[in-house]
Structure formats: structure tokens, C-alpha cells
Length: 87
Image (cartoon, rainbow, N blue to C red; front, top):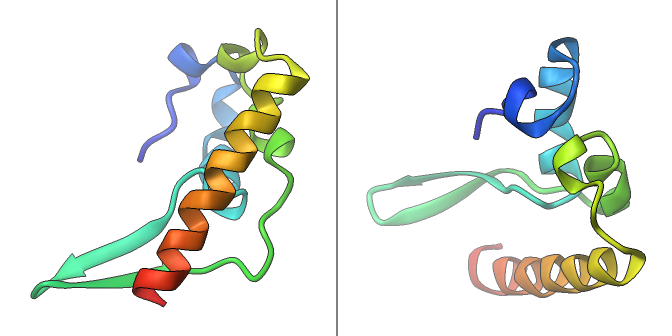
């Protein structure tokens, strides 16, 4: 994943921070797939609040609190499956 300042709507000097927030909030998981096995490179003990990632980008400014809650529920569900299957 490579954050896009122009398309996502954030200052280019925040590119690394946005990438880290994607992983720390669980919106992107950092893993490798090699020889038929998944290796998680970063497994956050607790996920940062989703809004920390979303509020930094203009592309998400239309989301309502309800939308964000639904996205967070989906994220939590997916991380439940990741922890169950790969960890």
C-alpha cells in the first residue's frame, strides 16, 4: 500500500504517517505470503481509533459517524478472522 497525497487529500509530508496509521488502526495489515504461509509482520496489540486514520484524509470527509461505525465493525470482524486463522 502506498498512500497518495494528491488523490487522498493530505499534505505530502504526512505520507509515512498515513501509511503507519493504516496499519496501526487495522485498516491495512502488513503481512508477507511465502511458501504457502502468511506471516504477519505487524500485529497491533490494540488497534488505534479508526477516526485517527480517516480524519487525516479529504477522501473520507463525507463519512458520517454511522458510516465510520460500520467500517469499524467490519475492521474488527476482519481482524477477528485474521487472529483466528493466521495468529
